[in-house]
Length: 128
Image 1 (tube, helix red, strand yellow):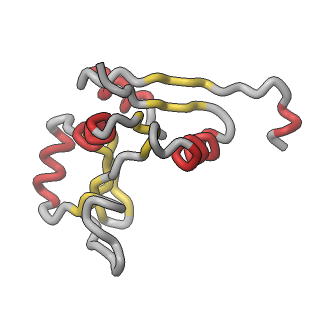
Image 2 (cartoon, rainbow, N blue to C red):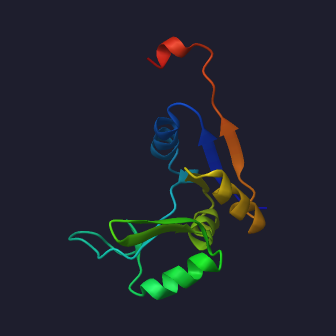
């Protein structure tokens, strides 16, 4: 038994994700993504990102399905690893994710069965 990842779909999902993490830090957390980007001043490896110095290794890990999602931006790779999601669960917290359907399938394949929540407001007036 483990704290399952949580994925929220629908309007204002970013706000809901942020509120869960901010207001319930003892129960929810973001996972730390990986990147091949160089570390910036005041960034700490393992806090903002896991900084990967070997691009080929990260590419190999992506092709080996060790990442639930990955992509390239500005010539650098970014991704969320299965290990990063498990690390949050190991800390007895539920990992809040903002991912695609493909990532959900990869989570399930890895034995990390996410709780998926679709939020549909009763009245669309409050959205506008």
